[in-house]
Image 1 (spheres, helix red, strand yellow):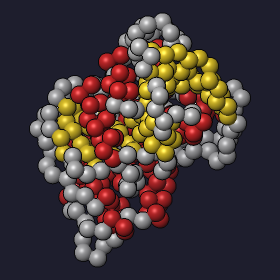
Image 2 (tube, helix red, strand yellow):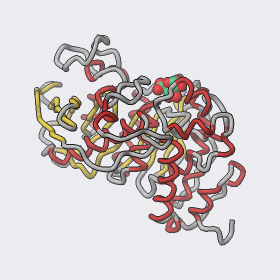
Image 3 (cartoon, protein in one colour):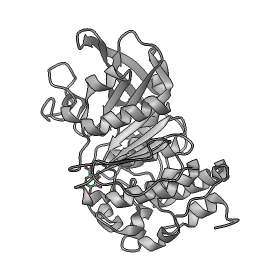
Image 4 (cartoon, protein in one colour):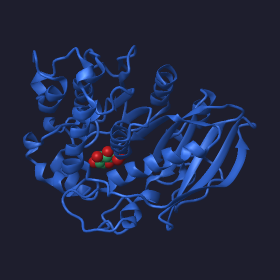
Length: 366
Ligand code: GCU
């Protein structure tokens, strides 16, 4: 380890050599760039070059929670054709509001009970209300922005004919972007537009996601340095969990069941994880020096809680931090630093218990 540059360590680290190092400065811009290039080529795919025209228009607005919260729907139009509906909640009367930005699985109308939110599909209104504690978030002084992931790209293997992929021309190959990269790109588009929302501090946008959308939050936060903080909730394989452990969901299985999520190249590593040139701790390290929070759930073996914890622990040297041991269910690690972890008791989900901790961390660290 002695004399080895930190980035080279992170680059070549095996599970057995997760030794802390003392010099985070060595995790240089150059090393981060190089690492991201490998993740693009071999895991998530390369975003197409060039920009598309975009428009951000306030469509609807009302006050809720006895006038303490303003709720809005903005429409983001990409490439003149793709319409994306962003749902915002902001505490009334506050300036420079930091916001949480995350995709939702089933439509904005599932985030809240009631009839107001534009219905995205036939899913029941309010179905996901437990995952989005809007009152808690806004009372803590934060805003929330959420978008149905399907607005950016339908979560199915459609041959990349729809969503953001259809906005760009060109032949596809093994390094072309998949759906997770498309969703992450979408999050960056919205982050940029938040600069146009007067109450929001667009330099304090926390990107957050659960499960497949947690994988997306990590990729968005690692590749777009303008996200101020990154939260991965139960993101598992292709997210925070180390692929080389082959515990729970594996690379072969994820590519078989969700062939559209990653770059075609990622398939090469199914049942050959040891040949992967990178592992997920290096993705997490790309977030440094910005704060990162990884969380697992004790009954979520599929997402490999221990693999998520170890990846974070192996990445911590990039912040100059050292994490302790894997906690018991209900436990938290890294509370004094910028690299935080908790293991919620229970199943694969995102709950108020998780949000309480995310809010506390964001308050301290932004
Ligand atoms: C499946 C998938 C996971 C994913 C999860 C989800 O379980 O195998 O990789 O994280 O769905 O998004 O809920």
